[in-house]
Image (cartoon, rainbow, N blue to C red; front, top):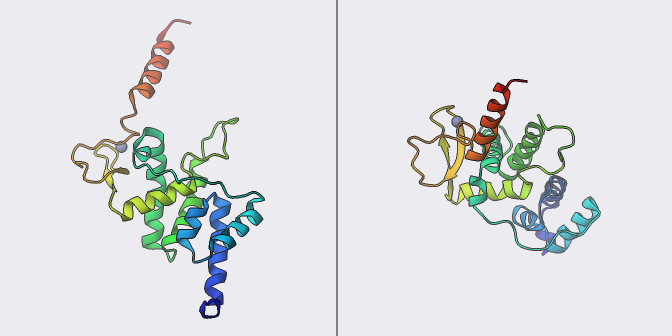
Length: 188
Ligand SMILES: [Zn+2]
């Protein structure tokens, strides 16, 4: 059994799994992306993280990616991923790892002091789910008619007249902005 398994393939899998664990991957993700056994992955996880892997189901919801802030972060990530997968030698799981690193770099820009920089809006496991959702045709990229950016949307959503979450923020964000404007107009 293990004699037929290539040693270098196994070494690659361990490196990949280690990268993914550092980025916050759940055990189910590692099982899907490598050919290492559950026991070896669990041991590797404990070595890298110094803690046991969390139990329980993966967050399985397409709708989460459509809510305002998650949509902006998911779209940023997926645009990077698509670029890496298409135009660089990094493919599939390697593209995922490298795209997620770039996403972390980009998304931490502009964080206010005191904001929790350790908890990105889009977790690695969600980023992995998103790529699977694209592969299974549950979601698509829609072009915003105002900024021309590409954003994550439900598959088969009509593309004409699509306006993204940045160009058309939800009412609550709009209200905050309007209130700030009206406060600014008040005499000091
Ligand atoms: Zn837009």
